Length: 346
Image 1 (cartoon, rainbow, N blue to C red):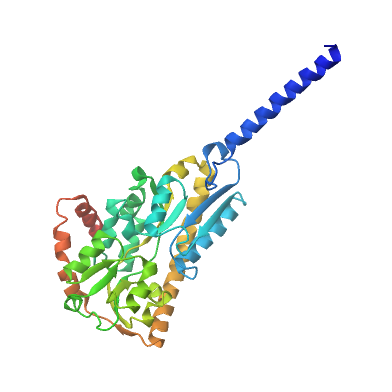
Image 2 (spheres, helix red, strand yellow):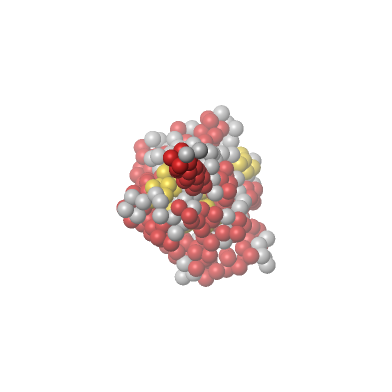
């Protein structure tokens, strides 16, 4: 082989090695087929896409708050971080989305604190009826030591709480007989979230708790599969459940917040700047959502009256007395200590 041919051969081999090395490097940075565009520590300087799923419709104040958070996050990161939101249960029920967050398939999910108690036992605190004296007490707890501790309580199971959204107070609505005393619940099938605490509450009042997905409830009410349900005014109105259940009893038995949870696995892969931007954008969205929630609650109550719904204001004292065994059963447990700390907040 002459020198010229040998030079071309050597050059070709070197070029092949360089191309192979570049291809291998690119493949090693590429996400696995079908994987969501979740950030990793190695790609911390790249554009970050975070996916958030929830089961609410796009007109809900909590969805509006998350859309506000997405806008704030883009602004704070100068376009580096994009928050993509999947509403209406597109990626599964609340429980299914929480499981995806645990695995790191989703970055975030919005869930009521009630289903979260199946993953974080301490979240059952919020399901205890008549725990909070009023709205001001409720927010002091959420923004104080107890609320902050509950946001970190799920880190061991892969869930990091980011913030709380206002979900108001929950009250009963029924197809026929209004709920004016606990006795009115005897034998009634009442839809509840998939929460042991919520089921216990209905049972203590004499009702038959019936867990089912939110998206199935309208049809269940329409067909008489359940006699009623319980929720806050904006959700009752926005779901149009008032079309088939026109008795709304404002007993305000629980105040259960919505919680934005982040995948601990993905959180730890983010650099400090991205973590800070996410938390700051979430905090901004809480202030926005609380104002919007208060406005929507008043609008919902006015719209319900205009739609022919009868709104009742039962005395909460008999209901409070009826559920005291739930508190007595907590004696000596971790929740009993949390209850005491909540009651001491002034």
